Amino acid sequence: MIDPNSFMVFSGTCTKYLSEKICKSLGCPLGNLVITKFSDGEFAVSYEESIRGRDVFLVQSTFPNSDNLMELLLMIDAAKRASAKSINAVIPYFGWARQDRKDKPRVSIGAKLVADLLSAAGIDRLITMDLHADQIQGFFDVPVDHLYASGVILPYLQSLHLDNLVIASPDVGGSKRANTFAKYLGCPLVLCNKTRARANVVESMQIIGDVKDKNVVIVDDMVDTAGTISKAADIMKAAGAKSVRACASHCVMSGPATQRVEESALEEIVFTNSIPYRSNCSKVKQLCVADMFAETIRRVLENKSISDQYII
Image (tube, one colour):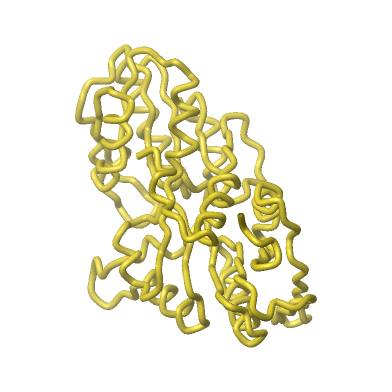
């Protein structure tokens, strides 16, 4: 049994909705943290109760804007200076993960920079979900517990009882993830080959595989402007697909994304609630990952393996 006095959970501003559900699942109160904001945009973090000698879990996704990352860094620093026993960053959505390599000259590797910032601030462990690239785990010199949204998405897809199911990847880079889904569900895999004019702009796309009279589910790790996923859905529907759905771990949904999804051939698009979705779209459905993160925190505290909670 976990000693309820041995650990505490705190939340940043943007992820409080999820932190409260994690605490409910753990059967513990959400810690009292105050963030004071100054008129020039600067802010300060203060723990309003003692955390000395406690295992502290700080829940905060680092989706834009950058205030969310800075807030997390200040939370880590304050916890370290308040003599926390261990500092565990729980980051359901790890931002800047698309910048994981030098894909052209003279560019930054943002994911590595964020990893260095978190490490320098003083984390002892990272708990995150569906990184854009698995190798980002290697950017850290502390343990990384990498969870998979398939734990909540696959049961939902199975509950739909779709016949003639086909799993699709919106690009070649996501084929490994889509192939894992297809193997688990025992259905064929279809790929989309796309070329980009520039970031967030798809120039052309072709389908590799048969979708005629099939119920297609497009699998991705995140949806930003929804340009790729909407175009893929429209092309598949035009190619004779019976229905087209999409599922992705992270609901970034920026800029024209909501309008594109609403106007596309997608019947629905399923996300987790790693990022709050505040727009109004009849096709968006979010699945809660609070229990999954709570169980991981519980196992970390009890020094138990977390791998057997993975579906795939």
